[in-house]
Image (tube, rainbow, N blue to C red; front, side, top):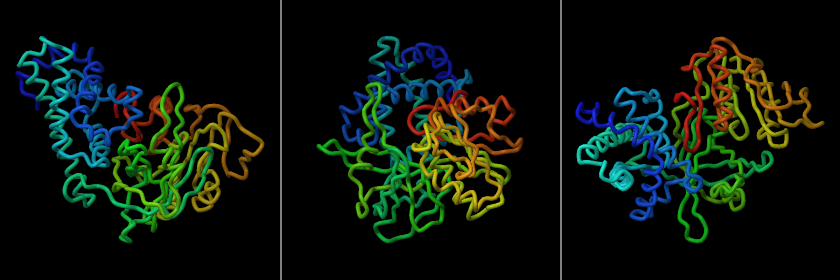
Length: 406
């Protein structure tokens, strides 16, 4: 808990810190990277370039301060779990929190100047370290569960056994441990980090990809959409490498599976809602249920640009045959003559998804994955239709969270 003296200071200074949050984090990152350029290997350069990372950090620190002072903010247990899983997938270590804290506090001083008295600095330092200590403890438990020794030594070599085109700008990679060891289990909805070395001495970049295959198989499968820059944003550094340079026989560095969200929660009706490449955890869920609970009632709702962009589309008839209580409802922004609902054993609608028309059992557990605006729209519609918030799980890749927090 925040000390009473610090609580009073934080409440008094929250408005000014909130107002200058992105300016503070905008100073923080250049400071830290100048002093520790090796940390560039841990941060998504695309999110740095667009400003998403600094906005997310500013929002997180302010929201955590609101949580500690009881002045607002979302429910933090779930959010801390989400952050801890992401950090563990990157191999974050306790000493790195010291580096971040030092440069974050220095950035606060640079932006707010004389307003940062010793009392103000001490109060916000306390906020930071309360958050850091919670995350360090959670990450330590995750490393232990994953069998990671030496805190943060998460990387293992995996050999690529197949590269399969799935749709426009989408490929699947199948992988096995390069050392011939066992393939770890995972829960549908979990992801792995993939680390690649960039050309030109630019170091390493890491991205997370959902496992899209069946848990318990003798290999892992990830499905990767090539990110093409639009509106001035850069092309995806890692997805471009995986599309252009990786072939069967190559080796990649992967983390253990992490992620606090299960795509198969509960044992009653299940609703899987996805858009674009967000389909990947749903495919893992369907493969898992076909092997373990084929009678479970499941609805898969998926939105995509068109049939050609819909990854794993050809797998749906096979899964439908193994899951007799599976219902498929697809929304394509544009349909073509090749979109045969009978062949897909699916209902195919034109246009964007309408949350009011999503088939819904009153007692269903829900899993969402897709772009943030899509998930906000669908989640809001399901909440209005009476689905309890605790039965709606979702996965966010990159900075940000849904409206309303969890």
